[in-house]
Image 1 (cartoon, rainbow over the protein chains, first blue to last red):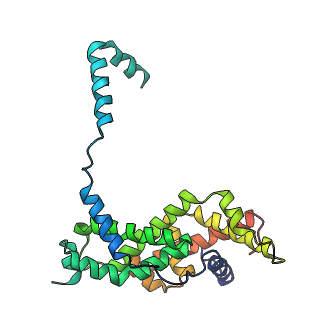
Image 2 (image 1 turned 90 degrees about the vertical axis):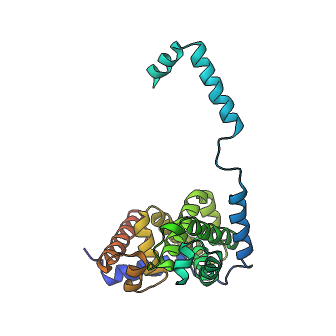
Image 3 (image 1 turned 90 degrees about the horizontal axis):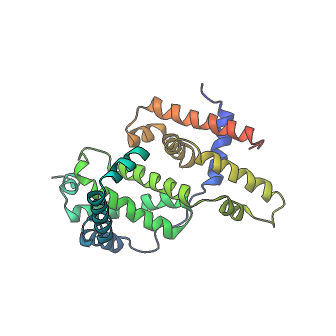
Length: 78
Length: 172
């Protein structure tokens, strides 16, 4: 059902107060920051897992090899 | 080759041209929602960064402005949802000098909360229609939706907001 114009106008007025127009534009040229952002992403050492994730995974694998029954305990609790 | 085709192929100069063409309106839309120039600048960069990363999926005949607008608005509302707390709202509305300011500001804060609970697609439609006062035809083109769908979303949002406000016993 379409709301009447009165409702529409009231909500419009109220929303205009919630979100008044922002004055002015960006305070600086954003293009250099854009380039820097692109550069940072390209120079990131990939999205490879950090070293501590590998240590953790290795530790878990070692535990599983040493105590295979642990796997059953973990599966039981899932 | 058009500018958008060049951009879609990863041409940095084409991207810069689009960036310079659209950064102001994108910034203005974000700033209107987040009310913080620094945050608006960061989110403007984030918007264009996402655009650049997704350039290969962009169709050259598509609406670049609409695409940028949707990303920017979603980022702005995500930011609001992450950062806004009840405390911030109370601080924001405190205006002890004006006689009816407390009531008025309470109304605004309640409406804002009701607005933030709206589904994202309704937020987007109602922001464009009632906050920015864009014609339905333009909204439909920007969002790539039939005009009837846009109107329906706006009307649904208005009904929800009116109902929520009545439930809160707030007369707007």
